Structure formats: structure tokens, C-alpha cells
Image (tube, rainbow, N blue to C red; front, top):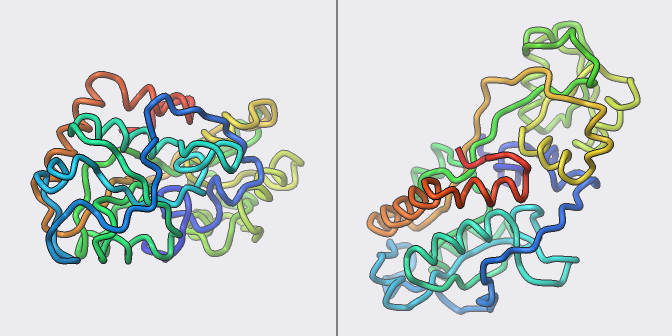
Length: 287
């Protein structure tokens, strides 16, 4: 799915964490993010649109990262104005350290983030960008550092929904613009249209619907930000939908991608990725 502006792994339109008012995850990144500056260009000396090499980055001593800074819990500021932090920020900071360079964050709006990469204003995008065929045709991607599945959320005491097929004849609440609306419809559910996750979960907790289908990250974040309310619901089933998010670089950045992938392998092996995941989601979402 390649909608121009989607949330949570960029495959869920306005149904993910940022569509919900329940988001309040407080995190404090131990890794340094002192390089939050307005850098004019990325590290590459190549023309805009050409690949960035590992040598470009290491010679510059920095990895210039494009990110929103307003997308909690992935890239955001503590209390709205504090230090830049978040899951993506911590992961890319750890990767930069493995490359022997300093991360330098360039904050920009989502609608301008790919244009910034195209123009060479930064070396890499770290913003929960999902891997799609359309994007892979134009950009290079690292190995995924986030893997999320579709889940069916039901009341904690429900035993009638244990598979997607069990939604047949049941009532769900979904945003009409999301892929989860189609998933629920295709399963035979009677879908009530809502604006997003916050409304869906409210209707479920009020007993007005039987279930809601959404991204696993959305539910994990809900459990972290409002554990008392989240105790009233559970994952009844999973779907076949899997979304993978990765770092994005300019096409032709082969050795930089290889170095990033090696760094991610090391961070996965030493438990760093799992630790960062647990901090923000209470579960390992890195694989």
C-alpha cells in the first residue's frame, strides 16, 4: 500500500498511534542526539539524486538523518519541546555509532521528506517508512528494523473470535481510508466507519462493537500508554498482513546500505534492538 500519508509503518491511514489521543508514551533516549541542527546538505559530494557512499558519510563524520520529530513514539520531542527521541531516533543513533559517525537530525514534514532525500539535504530517512514495491523502484532500503502484523482486538473475555474468519457477521469499527477497513470487510464483518483508533477502541470498550482490526504496533503502544484501559481488551487473532519498515537512502547507495545492514545485524545480535523495542512497545518489534 503506498498511500501518500499513512501512519504506523505507513500502511495504516489515520488508524495508528498518532491518530489516537491515547498516545502519551514518555521516553528518554540514553543515546546522544545532540546533533539536532538545521544542516544544509547531506554528507554526499555527489549530485542530488545520486547514491551516498559509506566513505561520504565517514569522511564527513556525520550521518544526516531526515525525520519528522512529531511522530510519537518513533521520532518526537519530550514534552513537545525537549530533546529529540523515539524508537527510530534511538535505532539510527545506534547505527551511526556503529559506523563511527555522529547522527545529525534534520526535521521536516512528512510530505517533504522524500524530496529532501532527492535533493541531497540528508543521507537517510528514519521515520517508520514501510517498504513497498513503488518505493523500492526509486530508493534503496536497509534491512527492516520494524516488523508489524495485523491484529484483531476483542474484549478481554471474548472467546468467539480466534481467527480472521470469525469476523464474519460480527461488527467492527474501522477508518474507511485504511487497509484494515478492507480486511474486515473481506472477512465478512459489518464495518462501522470511524475516524481512527481512538474511536474504534472506545466503541469496543463500551461494548458497541465486537472487534476492531489494526496494526500490532498500535495495540502495543496502547498497552504502554494506557495499561489500565488496555487490560479490558486483548488480541483475539492475527491477520496475514505484515508491514516492514526500514531506513531509506538514495538509489545507488550500495555500500552504505551494506554497512547499515551490518550494523543492524550487530545491534540485533547484542540485544540492542530488542532493548529499544521493549522500551517503547513492551515487546520486540524489530523482527
